[in-house]
Structure formats: structure tokens, C-alpha cells
Amino acid sequence: MVDVGGKDVTERIARAVAYVTLAPETLVLIRDGKVLKGNVFEVARLAGIMASKRTSDLIPLCHPLPVDRAEVTFEVVDERTLKIESQIGVHARTGVEMEALTAVSVAALTVYDMCKSSDRGITIGPIGLVEKTGGKSGTFRRPLPPTAGGV
Image (tube, rainbow, N blue to C red; front, side, top):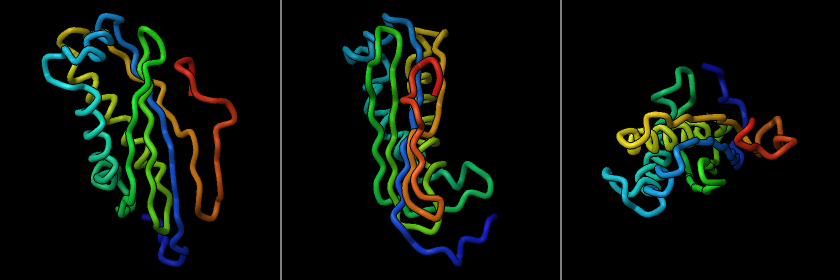
């Protein structure tokens, strides 16, 4: 594990995205709230938030962080594509990129799990970091906005 003890505590924010491609009829089921397992957006949102807070339990050598804010949102991009975005905030000595990436990954996996009985062809990806602020390395923003064709 990297020693971050000498670093200053600063506000750090990270945003990540994941794309889920589904059959159009599956996306209609999700939007209409007719998926048998329940409200896909709410369950996946909670799964992503919970996962962000447990990232250090999942990723070896990842520092446990006191997450101050965790948001997971969904946007229907087109008839087959769902965009999941997370924004995670913390006051800490190290960044929250892994927490943001974990949030969207687990939210996407939750969408898959909740919809797999009606659509075995669901695909997840790309997944990527969109932005991070704070810390010694400063701000990172992806030069081009992510699309389903590539983050």
C-alpha cells in the first residue's frame, strides 16, 4: 500500500461513466418499471453507492476512504444504450477515482443481474474515468466526452 500519511487532506472529487447496451424491449421494461425484480434504477443506484463505500474491500491495496458524497445517475442515451454516471466526493489524502469506477461498475452489474432473465445479450462497457479534481496531480478531464463507442 502506498504511504499517503505525509499528504495533505484535500477535497477530492471523481466522476466515472459506464455504458450498458440492452435490447430495446428491455430498456422499455426498465423505463416502465416492469422488470420482475423491481425498480432497476433505484436498486442499481443503491448498489453503486454502497459499492463506492466498500471499494477498499474489493480492490487490493486501495485505501479505505470516508466517502462524503456518492451520487449515481442514469441516462437513456438511445433505444439500446443506458449511461450510468457516478460522482464521488471525499476529504482525504488520496483520490476517489477507484470509488467512482467501482460505483458505475457495480451499478452496471446490477442492471445486468436484474434484467438477465429477459435479455441474456446485455453488454457492459466501456467504463472509464471522466474527471477528477484535487490532490497533488490536480485536475484531469477526459479531452473528448465519452460515448458508447469509447470512453
